[in-house]
View 1 (tube, rainbow, N blue to C red):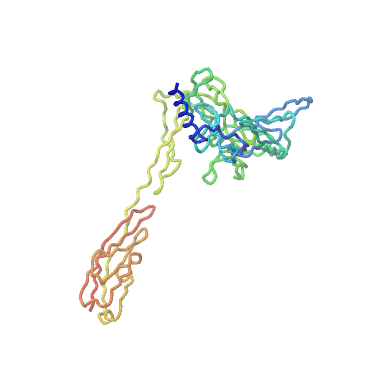
View 2: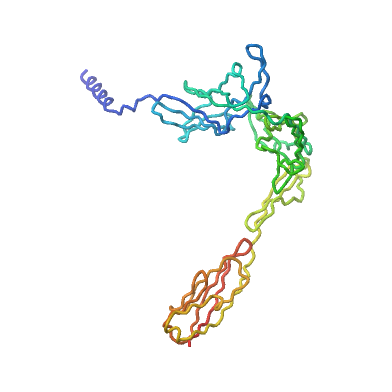
Length: 414
């Protein structure tokens, strides 16, 4: 009994001297903030994912499906000590799931963050006086939504040619809800000749064609004006859509929250080896500073591939250097230093790049300026003939390699 009593006493003493925070409960959440990576903007009664619905009074209203999270959104959690921790919205494509991750790697599960709105009672109107609510751990905050009048009434998309994808190429394998694998294709991108017709709110129709203007591929009107706000133009598809051969498959072209469906075919390449490539087109010419790109197209299915064109090889620097003979008077050297300009001692032509100079060998009283090549003969040098070896270097440029030539300048003091 004494042993048990002694053990309990020791255990109580150990617990009493341990730091109090060893068993402290996690600090409670005092408040939260939510900042979307991009401001939430909807277009009045034309939101691409919106729909007309009926409220409790039997009145119709337009419901906006803009209440969603996006990559880069920041959920800030403020604890009771006013410490702030930012959690960034992240999407795991492999798991098809969202989470919020802090800089330290802490994770808030998507299921713990709720997003709600009360549009059925508080219909969104034009302006910024619209909100939805984000909630986490019993705390909530409001996020503003701007509703704008859409300058675009409708859009029409006319592909330059039938859109297609090659079977099991240009996408990734995914697993559906039943555990079956399927190939999820990427939505086709725009190409030269595609036409986008945009009807403005006043009924004006502008036709934009996808083409190159000033080395930039985009949609341009007849006057070479680029499609306004082309960052709002996109192609997309539902990730779980199963595109198959010999079936009707579709993707979306969207602009300013208007969207149209475009038919796409899944084709098989006719070549048993996979592809028959053409001779290729140089899409990015190589230069002396950067590699180029050559693009090949399969004549059977239209798929493309690229190869790197090596940078252009630099040329040999054609620098020509010749030395001259210098004659100096001993009388002057008895009184002062004599400086000789480079051009009077060394002749240089055809050099490519910045010149530098280095004395390789010669009398200690003769020096050479590294930048200008000027030769200085210090006073006191005796009569005689002196040979000075000088290395002339040309740094080269984008087209020419660096090179050096060594010459001997003969200096006669008499």
